[in-house]
Image 1 (tube, rainbow, N blue to C red):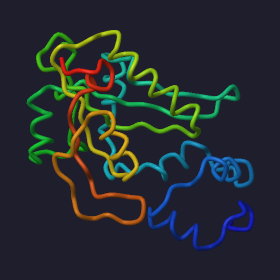
Image 2: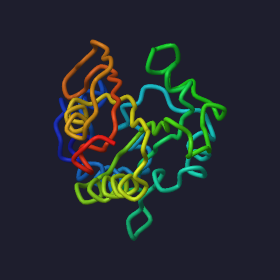
Image 3: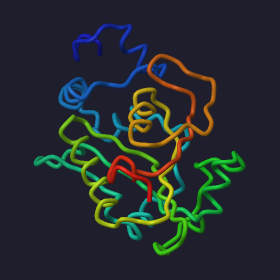
Length: 205
């Protein structure tokens, strides 16, 4: 396999140990030469340790379609996604206080009341196979908050990658807690919260 996709055995070992992600150009070779579906590779690249329950993202997309998107290229191949869950504040507090894991969320933890105060936008996952698609998804995310101008909301979630922690800090979020299990480019599970007002409007609402 290493020879087919032009990487060395150590790289494959790092993939297996979840120490590094499969680069988009390498993923393309794996799809073409080994006929492995792109979605399978995406699942391997995912750092979320426990998937959400069946139907949760589908319901989140029904409530909040603007922030639950799947991208495909002109050939129909998967190229990225964003999943943001509209959580009940009580459920969000349980995750923040470590009384519940995000993998235990169910449909009753979502809310369709987008007039609630405070609103909770829980970022579960964002992935793109290229810089251009990353920019596109981030633009959709930020444009939504610019348009809505929410007065009282929380943007929060758990990330597992060191570079995402720094990006989210720059966006105005702060670390609430972090597990001490970092390895390579991966951090321990890191819960972050805040809002995007300073980034988008130069001031807090």
